[in-house]
Length: 566
Image 1 (tube, rainbow, N blue to C red):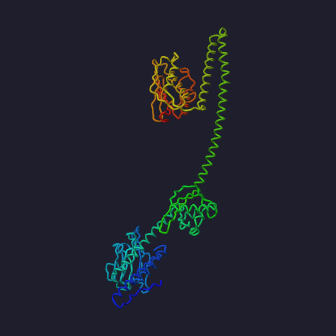
Image 2 (tube, helix red, strand yellow):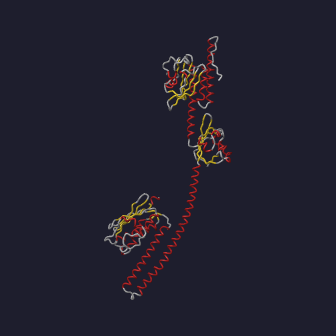
Image 3 (cartoon, one colour):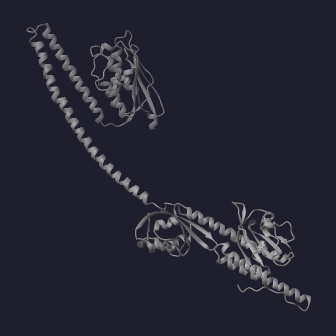
């Protein structure tokens, strides 16, 4: 390096000598600080700077060997970062054989680590406290001096110097090397932080780039290489605009300058849709998060880049599926409309084409009974009565089937429905008939529901009329109408003390034409409860029944409460 050892200058008197020594001390300090600062500024790591730093220290301060050790906190050991020997040092001696690692307390570096203080040995070959496995007794080196390398008060490593001569403690040298040790310790701390930062960046699952104020890329990880198709060395030093689509580059300069004028973190996904420009000229959809980082070297921006190609493809697939679904819904709607039209046509045919012959059959049967009763015997009159009853039942069945089909097609608007008023109205209508006038009816507190008033009126007509019909043969027929109020839905019920049924067959009750009692015992078409179930289902509720033979029956149904809609 061309650094010469400073030799003392002889002076004429004491005052001049002290002045010369002070000047030499200052010169030594300045030369050492300059040499250490220069090497640390140019080296990316202490390992690369260690040999030159130790050479400068040894030559300027008059020592023959230097070593620098870094503390590995995770492994709890000292790691050798480098050494330097003067040409006169016998490197075969045990005292200068390098070890890569040392444990606490081992050798001079380990002792300095343990005590955390500078350590002098005028002649370590006579100092039994030094581990012989590290310093072996050889005539090559004798004096030793070690200091801790600190950063912000925390020990980061150890610097050790060896001399071929016996060395006495030197306060000035101790102060000087302590100052330099802090400088080296700060460098160690900074490079360790940078290394940790590089490891985090490299292991990131997303692309990461560090960009300076001029827009130049100073660092990137392997994931960023994969996203943009470049090798790392092809992008380092290039401006970020190289990765921006050509048509947006001019505006991007302005955006970059605006960001650096008032740096503020921008989270992933914020802002407009972004695309990166790959090496092969293709575009890649990306999301970018920006994080400003203030350093002694200026402000940088850390760009975290997420390739969202798969997400875009998934979104496009979902969009296509939605379009296809909308088309299918339109097609299905059209098919349902056509089916409804066909059903309406069919209903009209039932209503018109079937009713006409039924009316004819009933009319001619009636005329025979009225006009030709003298020509008919008792059996003939009986047959004509059966024909009239069957046509009447057929007409009722047609009406019920039309009502059942109409429930699915009928549009309705939901409003608050006074269920108690409807129940009372239905009971009054039924009890006008002498056949059911003797039954007792109890109507409890029945809360309002949310639905179609006309449809729910039909529900009560079917359930209450059934209750009257199946309890009419009891000596004291009794019907109870009530409800259990809930926060979201109410449960309504109609109970009777009639003939009941086997609960194992309760589900059959709600099928079209399903009956649990013989038609000769109780009239009916077997459609009424199917209509009830369909209406309740259209209101989002459910219906069920509980019973046992000769112990009456209870029919339950649920409806949305008005409270839930308020």
